[in-house]
Structures are given as structure tokens and as C-alpha cells.
Image 1 (cartoon, rainbow, N blue to C red):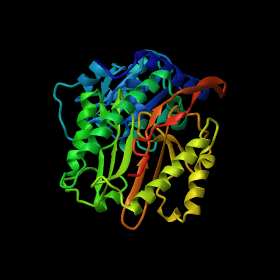
Image 2 (image 1 turned 90 degrees about the horizontal axis):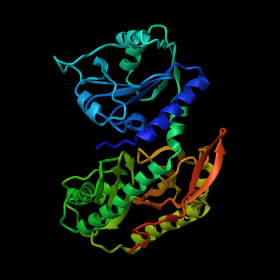
Image 3 (image 1 turned 180 degrees about the vertical axis):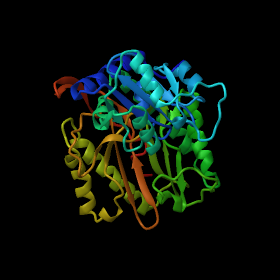
Image 4 (image 1 turned 30 degrees about the vertical axis):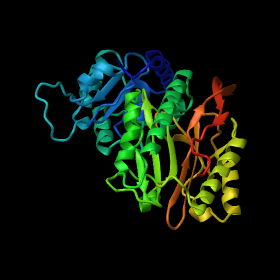
Length: 398
């Protein structure tokens, strides 16, 4: 059993080759690693452990998966791309594999030339994250090659979600519902933060989660203002708030849910007031959300509300972002954002602000993508989705 959909992979490879043709490129090199997993996963439905990797997509011919020898058997069993070559630069430094076939980029260039493939101009994806040594070794191995950054063009492909991708995100969102209920039930004075995380993670895994898009968030007391605090052995206390968040993945695609809750089960009047501010910003932003709106436009209601109520000094981040292979991914919709909504299929609205004692977070998960509209972008049709319902499990401040 693998995480990829081969029909999706074939469509995506075809789209990558359209970019190559339009830019006069001979191939694309897409870098990825365990932290920057999405660009590689998009074509492979796979990511190795410990080692780095890349996908090489010639404009014609079979694509290659480039990586290290420890990941090679795993890739051949579970990746959509199974033509694997191993390189020292992708390996764990100083590890040895005496029976592995390990080559360099010059040898790969020679292999391609023997097949009639001559690479002169190569599009690079992941230029902001690729290690310097990978770049240097690649350029030295493919002598005289011109490298062109096509990261933006490639990641735009990821922004247009297919119906199959929608299904994975919604399945992950369903796991968020299950996790939220279990995490809330585990919150009580005297409980460890890691107990709350374990409750959420266990139910997700038991129901098909393939991984998590971030380390599960549980931060109580002073740790609730750490923005993304992972669970520790801290014991939760009466009267405190606890921030929770979890992002299970299904076949690589993330859902997310988060909330800020009273450890005792009852908000104080001040805590309830803050939560209600956030709830109102959610409602106002949701009310204007539609395809074609820019980040600048989407940011207006929440920012105006915060200004009106003297809360701007507590604002940590903008109110809207996209979701997909990463829990938060491009395009983002902030006050300086010009990209239009409708490019991503699913957006998540969330609000974060901090007072002198606590960080108050209300992160909403999208319950359903229910309305499609046909639109044209750069001459090709794609579906854009409207969020018809935000189902926030804890909208009512208790």
C-alpha cells in the first residue's frame, strides 16, 4: 500500500513538462527533504527518512528519484517514481553502505547522454531550501548547464487542488474532529501536556493518519504564549489556559484544528471576552471570503476589528492561509498579499493574539469544500472553491 495516486502523478508530470517547454528547459530538478517534504511528495507520494533527495524530470523520458542508499529500497516499494539513483551528497554524512551503488552527477549526466538526453538548461525547484553542497555538486557534475529557478511556477501547480486532493484533506479534517474530542477530554488539572497530545495522536493513527504536518501543540500556563509549543511533561494547573493543535495527514495531505481552552473547563470573564473577539473576527472574515479576493482584501475585516478594539499590538500573524501537503502553504493571504483567493482549494482562517499573560489562539478547521466554480487562469480551467462552512468546534466561549 502506497500513499500516491498514479493517475495524479501522471497529470502532475505532464504539467511540469508544460513548464519546461514554455521556458525552453531540458529538465526539472525538484529538491526535498523531511522538513521540506511537499515539493517532492507532490510527484512521488513519498519521502525518505534521514536522507535528502530530489526528483529529476526530463522533458522526455522516465523521471529519476535521486537520494541516498538507505532510502532506496523504501523508495522502490512505495514511491510513484522508482528509477532510483544514489548520491553521496544526499546521504547521512560519514555513513557507509558497502553494497550500495553510489554515483555522482557526472555519471548521471553520462547515463542520460547515452540515452540521447542532453541537459543544457535545468529548472530548479526549492532554491531557498536546497543545501549549498547539492547545488555545487550538481553544477559541477552537469558541466556547463544553465540553472533556472522555477520554484514559483512549480508551487503554483500545487496550489490548484484536484478532487482527489480535496478528498484527502477532508479525510484528514475528519481525523481532526476525532482528535479534538479526545484531546479536550484529556485536559484536566494534574494531567501532563503529553497526555493530551497522546490522546489526539493515538485516535488519528488508529483511524488512518499517515503522519502529522507539525508536532502536536499542547502549551499550558505561560507556555500558551509560545505560539507553537510542543507537548512537554508540564503538569496543567487549575485556572490556566491550554493551547492545543494537531495536524494529521492522510496520504500526505494535512488537516488542522486548534483551540485555547480552560484547564478547569470554565473560562474566566476576561478569557471569554478574548475568545469572543476572535470569534467575531472569524465571522467577519468568513462572510467576505470568495474566489478572486486578494490577501490585502481578506485581511481588512480582522485588522479593522483589532484596530477598533485596541488589539493590534497583540496580533501575531495574518488571518488566512492555504492548506495542502503542508499545514500552512503558499499562497498566503496577508496585508501585503496580492495573490487571489480561489487558487487554493481549501483555506484555513485562524486568529492569534497575545496579551501580557497568555497567547489566545483560535484556529479553525474547514469542515467541507462544497461549492465549485469554473474559472480560467492563464488559459486553463481549474476549479476554485468557496468555503461554505467553517465548523469551529469551540466557537462558544464557555
